[in-house]
Length: 261
Ligand code: MF3
Ligand code: CO
Image (tube, rainbow, N blue to C red; front, side, top):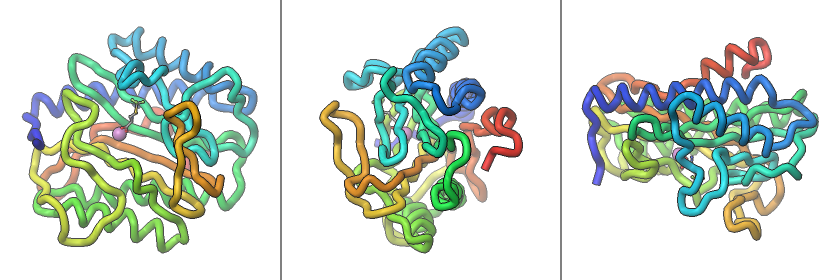
């Protein structure tokens, strides 16, 4: 069942996403070689709680942290740990959700740690482009297959593959609502998008082959070939002509300045 949101609900989602964006701005200040993913998790947890939010991943289906922190070949749902120390040239995908006043935000961002190789930088840029190409399709009258096609074709033109085991989703009072938003698809297929649908669009793009496996911790998904993966996510509201983007990378951009890709 797909719930269309009222304008009031969309504004509540925007506020929740704004706090998540600010949280990522705080992380952008500290992500550097030598920092552990457990330190990032604590910073995010305390910042969210200090601003009246509830970390929505913490305890979700037993997930043990505020953030998902997936490094290099990890695709999604990496668990923060004091044993994971970031080093120069790594990439870290941060994904989290906040419950603010009953409305759930969802966004993800892959950060370079220091200088990364040209190959990896291209993966990050292409994945972000995939996200915005998907968002361009999130308008009234288009179909979900149009959105998936836009993402998949851009990724594959660059020689990358699309993760199929994890998908975007509707979002609102629940973290995961209908519909599923696949990052692959065929034009003209799938449900028709309507104004007021709120979607978390989140391409997970892999430099190598598309196969992934789950580590023994039961959560961390990583590429089988151990080649790197990138993940960018924004929550949006479908509208006539142009999607309304509810999440924001602006706080990250303010912190990173010239280093923002
Ligand atoms: N933010 C993720 C998503 O996009 C969900 C994280 S899974 C959790 O769906 F279990 F950690 F919450
Ligand atoms: Co999501």
